[in-house]
Length: 111
Length: 114
Image (cartoon, rainbow over all chains, first blue to last red; front, side, top):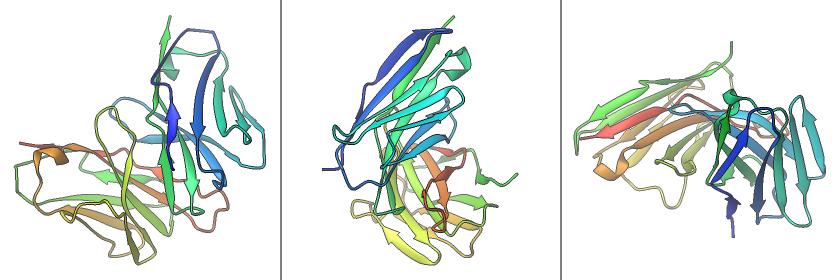
């Protein structure tokens, strides 16, 4: 199958860390991505990880990949109100031909 | 700045009246994609062009067609829009020369069908 699954909602307090989780099914995916979508806007690429890595850090963002369990997570440190958005994980199929997206996690950051 | 541009940002059309959405890019990427995103759902790939080669997804309705006259531009044509075609339409690009195959998205066109 080609399902990518995410929890639908996450609510955190400003300044806390947020962890958004994702599971995928296609073990042949070479890259996994995190995108951010603000209301009424397109998708912004946040970060991606190659499947032979288990962690990638980029400023406030940390991606963890457990390839054995097909589990991907995005940790946002010191979450701000501007981080409120929908976050999509996606896996790459056919080496660039197609992205399969999860249904998105709506992150709500409360002051 | 290099970018993906979509026009218009909002489009209203009547039931059954053909409509064309436009995408242009200054990234010089050889792959362009069209996605449909309905409310609270994941983007769904309709088709993509690798250079001039057109690749249609198996479940994309015949009502949807695309044209890519040159590297920079790609159009989505909806021949006879139905109420169920109301959605956000997202254009994206990627470079097959990039080993990470990441896709860059435009801001989208929100289509309303009356």
